[in-house]
Length: 115
Length: 113
Image: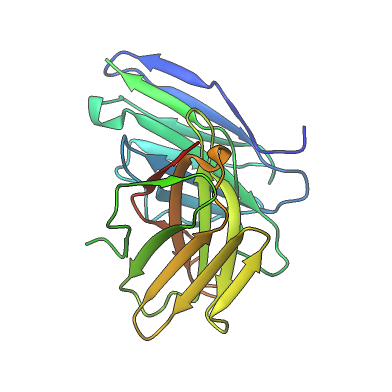
């Protein structure tokens, strides 16, 4: 497809379980972003990759959150020992490198529910 | 501390009338602003953007106005259509600095037929 895809679309985890969320960016987009959206709020930045390099991880809320993009394409966001406060929609976005840099295109998100 | 604020959680307008959605920001480093539209169970969809070197950008029924001195931007939709009913997010960024988008909390627009 032409857009950003994410899987799974829905994930239910028991507290303490590890989860892995996948993002396939738009082909040719070298920049990839992860955001967390809590209910009733706007998305909040988690981390940013340019190709395989993680250039900004200032938004990751704890060391339980880890993201990778080993080949500069698909990315995985991993959350270890999930907690109830991790329940949110996790959005992936990609953008091109030509101006304007910051028009980011979002996937449908993964809704994570931690019981 | 919210750097981007959308103070109206909801807005209801009649079909055919103008919808005006407002956004304020506090960080003077922001120089690129975007509006996204979001339907339930979908990701945000890019709508329109504006650079700080401009004060207006227009695309069809959508116009974004930027007032840098007031650190305020607005999105005008005219004429409003029922299909415009969605949550609208304002976002801000630095073009050459931090690439992350900072979002407001959104305004739910309902266009009544």
